[in-house]
Image (cartoon, rainbow, N blue to C red; front, side, top):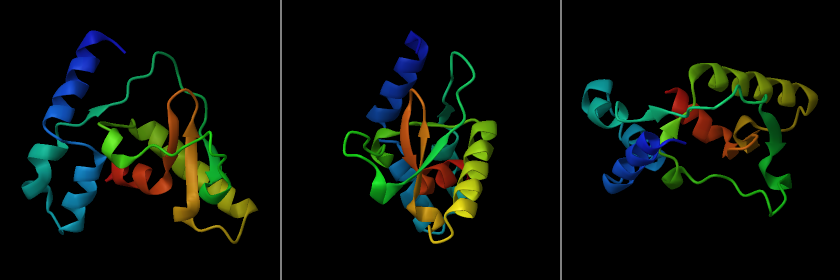
Length: 125
């Protein structure tokens, strides 16, 4: 992370904007026009090098040493290509594990953290 990115993240925290606030906006049947001021402030995660493919996990089977990222901690969104890779990984995981619901899957982005699929779906919106 460079200094500008850290400053952007600090500003988002000061404004109390996180993915949690996006969940709240979407829960209120917001339109883009009513939510655009907040949504457009989110920046993309910037990776120094191309990230490794996401790794799917069942949330209930995650070890305690691998906690899920909380929506109130996230102030950046994934680039669209990474979001699509996450969707492909969820589909592949479900193909091999028929009884696992989409919302019971988390994706590990190596070097960044583990994100519930619901968080990644929110980022796509």
